[in-house]
Length: 258
Image 1 (tube, rainbow, N blue to C red):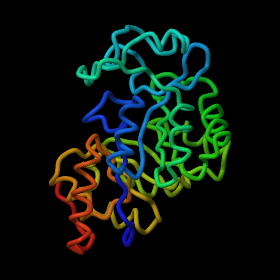
Image 2: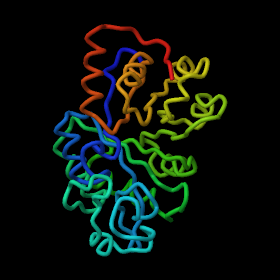
Image 3: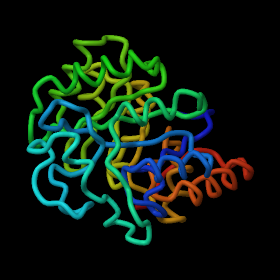
Image 4: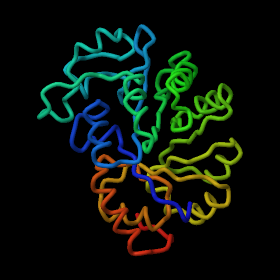
């Protein structure tokens, strides 16, 4: 984790400025200079991989109901601007839309979160991996999920895939658990970095730490001091400024206050 340039990944795109998980948010993330994008995927009724955070469309659109109960054509009839109503209209993107957008932006990586912690979405791991390979993006994608069975399936389908374990708080010896599963990274909520030995154990096992969701300027500095691999943030413009300022000071990685 030390000696690398800390990555800034735009959480659901530049969601501080544009409707989350929309092409508008991803385009802004690129314009701000983000190193990557984090997004969430579900399956529609007709088996299309769509990008949206929640199982339901209610919070982010003018529609109601579960994503899985609508076809892609039906999902596209809703306006997904509720998180940023100043944007007149925003469509739900497919994963293919995002992968194709990123194809000619080689500096950007993509964190695909498989949202299988409520519904299993039969075959979503295979479909997602197939699409990533079809679009030539396999070397720039990391898969993550709160459902670690999904991550195991990704490993079984594509042993070369880069994978990370999402989790919140309260687990003991998480780096040891991650090392046993043979994953590449941990994606913890920031509060987990406070536990004794956590950073040292991640370094010992060669695990990247991609921490979410960091929107506070001081906390961004703390994450830089901790030497994380990536800061996942709604505000990539701010995080890039903080990261670049921190790197100019030459401060060494160390502890973290949360």
